[in-house]
Length: 404
Image 1 (cartoon, rainbow, N blue to C red):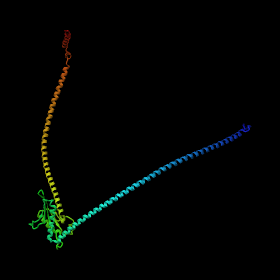
Image 2 (cartoon, helix red, strand yellow):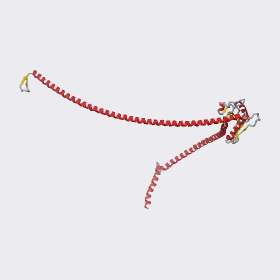
Image 3 (tube, rainbow, N blue to C red):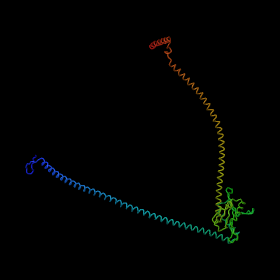
Image 4 (cartoon, helix red, strand yellow):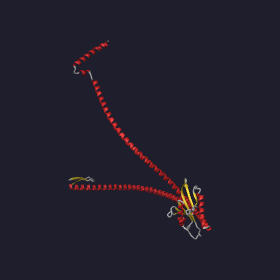
C-alpha cells in the first residue's frame, strides 16, 4: 500500500499498487503530452522562424541575383550599343572608302577614256595621213600611167628608184655602187646593179629589175613572168640577190602586203613595190654586215682553234720530253737513295763502334776511380805491411813539419 497527499487539500489517502501505477501512468501521460505539445509548439515556432529567415535570405539572394543580372544586362546593352556605334562607324568608313574608290575609278576611267579618245584621234589622224599619202602615190602612178607610154612608165620607175637611192641612201653608203646595167654582152641585162664594200671587199650585191605597165596595155604581165630572166641576169653579173621592183598585178594582196620572198622559185629573190625600195636595200645591207661580223668571228675562232691545236702539240712535246727526263731523274734519284742508304748503314756501323769504344773507356775510367791501396794490398800481407809503415812514417813527420 502507498500513501498519497492531495496537493489541493492536503488530505492523505492510501492506494494499492495497482491504483498507484494507474495514477502514475496518468501523471506521466499528461506530462508527456504537455511536453510533446510544448516541444511541437517550439519546433513549429523554430521552423516558422527558419522559414521566415530562409525566405528573407532567399529574397535577398534573389534581389542580389536580380541586381547582378540587371548589371550584366546593362553592361551587355552598353557593349551592344558600343558595337552598334562601331559598326555604324566602320560602315560609314567603308562606305566613304567605297565612294572614294568609286570616284577614283570613275576618274581613272574618265582619264583612260580621254587617253583612248586621244590615241584614237591620233591613230585616225595617222591613218588618214597614211591613206592620203598612199592615195597620192596611187594618183601619182595612175597619172604617170595615163600620161606616158609603156617604155616611159618603166623608165620613170627606174628614175624614181635612182632618185630615192641618191637622195636617201647615198649619204649612208658613200662608197656603194648603184648604176644602170649597160652590159648586154651576154644577150640580156638587168636594170640596176647595187654593190657595197667593206675595207675594199665586196660584201653584198643586188640585181634590180623594174617592171611597170599602163592600165590600157592590152597584154597584162605577171610578176613571175620575169623571174627566170632576173635570175639569169643576177647569175651572169655575179650578184648575190635579185629584186624585182614591180607595179604589176596592182590588185594582188600578196604583192601589196610588203616584201615578198620568192626564194622557193629562185634563190635569194624578192618582189617589192616601189615604196619598199629603200627598206629592201637597208634590210639586205644590215643582214650582210651581220654576216661579215659572223665571218670575222668564225675566222677568229678558227685562228684560235689553230692556236689551240699548236698549243696542244707543244704541250704533248713537253709532256714527252718531261716524262723522259723525269724517268731518267727518277732512276738517278733511286740510285742516289740506295747509295745514301749504304752510306748510312756504314756510318751506323762506325757510330756503333764509337759508342762501344766510349762505353769501354767509361768502364775503364770507373775502374780507375774505384782503384785504392786497400784493394791493391788485399790478400798481399807483405805489401800491406810496407804501405802501413809508409803511412806511419808520414803521419809522424807531419807534426814536426808543423812545429817548424
